[in-house]
Length: 132
Image (cartoon, rainbow, N blue to C red; front, side, top):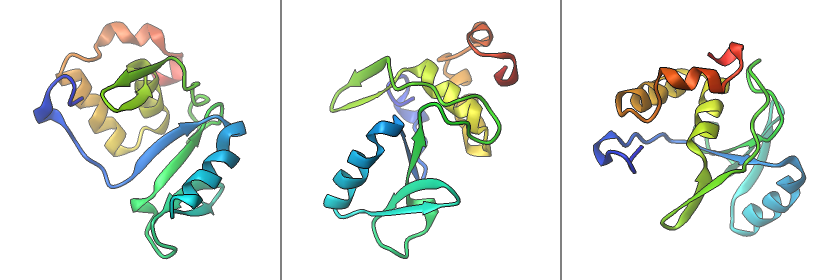
């Protein structure tokens, strides 16, 4: 959102990373080598800086193709978008992830996107009925 309006930037304590299941072992190896601690809690993979750190401060791993909270399967990581020093998923993919999770903070992020004109009612046809 900060790419559209710097004042609209919201931060959250956790980070979500969308990963293909086949890439998870390599991610665990790389994150562990970088000093993070891998944790699997209730079937969810995450990385924390300290073994006793809260899951609220974790890097959470979302797996492509898995269903979160009874929604639709997580989308693939392509197409990707390159911005400055990082690569991210396309906006349509991000919105799908937010609709799948649909936690309060995801709802607020979607409202922010609506207020900035990043998404609008014309996007409804891009998603299956349960996400509309």
